[in-house]
Image (cartoon, rainbow, N blue to C red):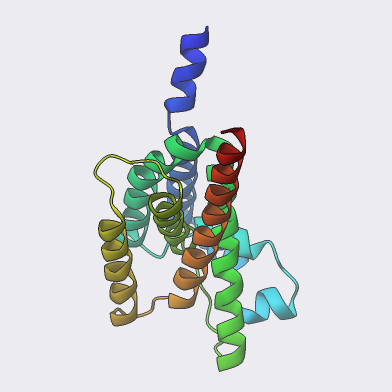
Length: 200
């Protein structure tokens, strides 16, 4: 029984569930455009109409197969690694808070610039995982196989650069998610290290 519990902790359960939900929602969207109508995030729908649930629901909508594939590929493989390090609950919490943070910054930037376009996608939350991973390699004191600060920073830099040089990409959501993930995980690492120092 204890062995099974240990193995369950090792499985990327949250990552699997998140990827599955995103794929299912995308398939539903292939038959009906309704999810886009009541799920996409914009200044009008969220700030003026008060439909705040769109900040979360938009995280499960994707424009096309490439958009979905790119996000889910990163979510599963990088997410599984992070989930193993910090646990299921914290991982899920950081994922959604990063996505919400990315959505809020996106809305703020759009409101200031007068942009009335809609945004969808898990990119803000996925960038949050980048921030979590960076905080882990910088502050946790643990060694993660094949992961170094230089590699993580380079990966983030390339992702951000790709966003700013591409078209029709919500870079504010990326930056917002990245920042929230980094701050949350950074605080967690510092608290844990302080607890460990007090024990010693």
